[in-house]
Every structure is written in C-alpha cells, then in structure tokens.
Image (cartoon, helix red, strand yellow):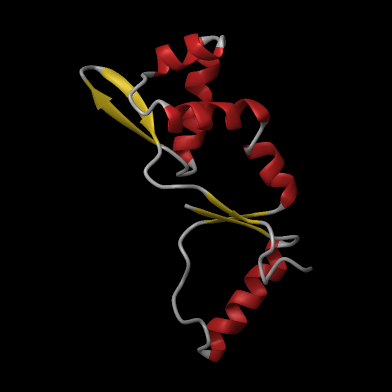
Length: 117
C-alpha cells in the first residue's frame, strides 16, 4: 500500500486532472493520498506500534494484541477497525477469532512530485 504525502489535496487533484486531460497519466496509482496533518492523525504512535505488532505477529487475535500492548481491548479493537476501514490492514475470521494482518508492505512517499502547493 503506497501512502503519498502532499501539502495540498486540492493542488494534487488539479495536477492529476491536468495529467489525465493531457493524456500523460500512464497508469493510475493505487494507494492513499493525505496531507501531513492527516498523516499525523492517522499514524499516531499507538497505531504505529499496533501496525508493527500486527506485521511481526500475523497470527495474533485482537485480544492477544491488546494484552501484549497493555491496552484495553476496546482501544485496540477501535484502532484495528479504523485501520481496516481505510485499507491499511485486513481482518480475517479464523476459528471465531478476528485476526488482523497486513496484506502488503506500507510504503510512504514523503517527497511526491505533487508535494508542493
């Protein structure tokens, strides 16, 4: 999953539309585009630790993750639902347990060609 950081979503969308209109956009990119402010909200230190733990221990259920992180189940569950909702992780059902996992590596592009406002 590619995450692109841009200063302005409006400018990014305008530049992208220009490329589409000019026919110079070869292939649309899959991923998430966000501003630095949004990035800071999405990737809180708690969520980064959770993502690292999910990546390291792909077979842990939510209860086990909460226990390992010394966090209430509800907090971990809410963060997992959020990360799943924006497509950063997937949650599978295995033997009546919810197992969060990463489908692909996260790549963060801080220096996008569209990054300037």
